[in-house]
Structure formats: structure tokens, C-alpha cells
Image 1 (spheres, rainbow, N blue to C red):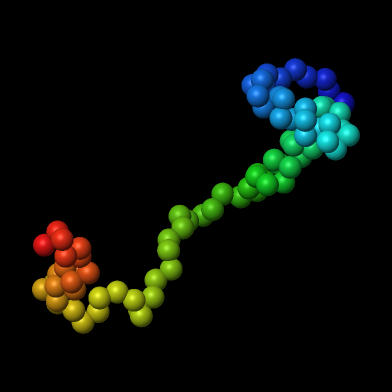
Image 2 (image 1 turned 90 degrees about the horizontal axis):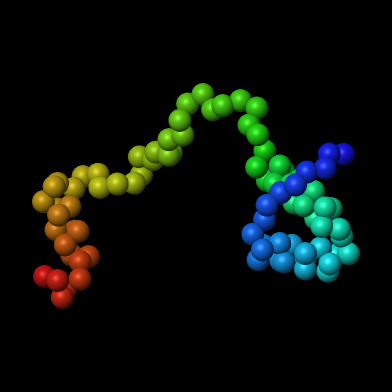
Amino acid sequence: MTKTQIQVPEELLEEVRAFAKRREWSLAETFRRGAELLLQVYPEHATKPTASWKPPTSNRVGWKGLSAEQLRDAAFADGDPSLA
């Protein structure tokens, strides 16, 4: 085991101390468990994604069949009447 020194804001340290006391853990054990949890929640990716993510597409959505004028009218129909 390696001994190290860290800097923690006073408010955070007090919260961590209280947390450790409630569970009857040492401060060191609490920080170790916190570090282990971070490594589980944020695992290092073994491989980088080969392509950037793109949202799925569907041919059942959108404004198919509407002209630009019909689309404009539909947009204004949903508007706030007090802004007209």
C-alpha cells in the first residue's frame, strides 16, 4: 500500500468524515472505496470508437409531403396568438 497526501476542500472533507463515521470506516478506507467506485463508474475504454455516433433515422418522421408554404403555415398555427 502506498501512503499519499491529498488536498480536499474543508467542506468536502467534513462531509466525507461524517460519511465515514456513520459507516464506521476510516477516512483512508472511505477515500479508497470512493476511488474504486470512480473506476467502476468511469471505466477506461479499451478501444476508441471507430466512427462518430449519429442519431438513428426513420422514414416515418418529418414533414414529408408538405410544401414550404404548408410547413410555414403549420409552424405559425402552433405559435402564441399574442405574438401575431
